[in-house]
Image (cartoon, rainbow, N blue to C red; front, top):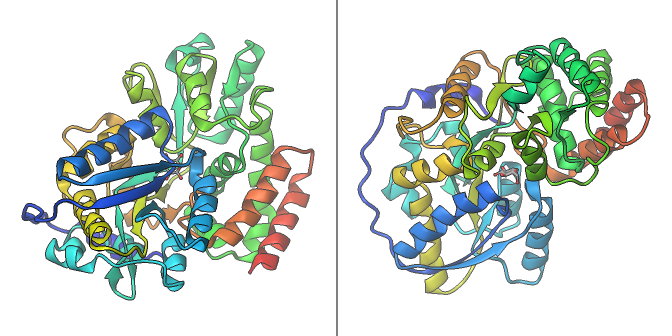
Length: 415
Ligand code: BGC
């Protein structure tokens, strides 16, 4: 699991000057799930930079937020013996594919460019298999955010809430005024995203026990029952059309004033920005109640492909992803902050600065935790059990006590 201590060391890493990359050319097929407006803009910057280096980019986008459909497509491609050269992949998934012998390493690029000195060690260790880099990180997304339409909030004279009690009070007012309080897309990964922010509000220690260490008492105890109680409350604040809705359509509801809040990672900010909206004016970002930081880092892993052209393409892409210029350009569009610790944030907006500030504080306070919903914390199979229970709860009248019990049992079965 992630060592928060080592990340602390990393935040203090001094900037190093990097020689300009000597890699150029090659061909890569890139499998990713960045298909919303903001996401497409962000991945477009990578394609453009790769082509500028003389490379050939074969785009393989698989629609479906959160990447579940992309991972199904990936499995089919690997089984057919025809993997794409680069795949948007993260967390323990990287280790799982490496364990199966499916990944190429890009260690020569990483060594030449000294990646170890510019990445937080805990993030670097996710990218490595047997001490060699098999993936390159592009960013750090924060999951525990609320996206707020200030005009809608003003209609009921409300402030941005800082506790769930306050949130519920504001949501009740909005509902009474005929306004949808919470824009939500009823897909399992979105339900799990909201769920894990409520888990964090019960403390980072509880979060870690339940969603990282999979401790049975935490999974099925009283605190988890409270978490489900709040999730039940939120269920009452979504509109009747929530089922199956894509996350970016929920973001659009906040943007258009159809709803007041969305609880979503900062890829939602990419949507606001792509629509020309200004943070602090047209929309607000505020952490969900509680103290902590749920992180979700996107990265590309390099699959075993043959032929010089493709292997060269992997090296060019790896070098490009880790270049300071790319990390700046990409993250300005994506809504996240750079994975490299030495990229200046002068061009970034107030939400990104808040993310960086809270990241640093949460590392110090031991409240920096990996996302379960976004595959940073636990193996896919166990995550699947969480998603099933949380979604069943959200779409039924199951009691909170039954849900907590079911969660403990499901996780036990999957282990
Ligand atoms: C990814 C983001 C992506 C989001 C919605 C998350 O799991 O980390 O990069 O924007 O899913 O598709």
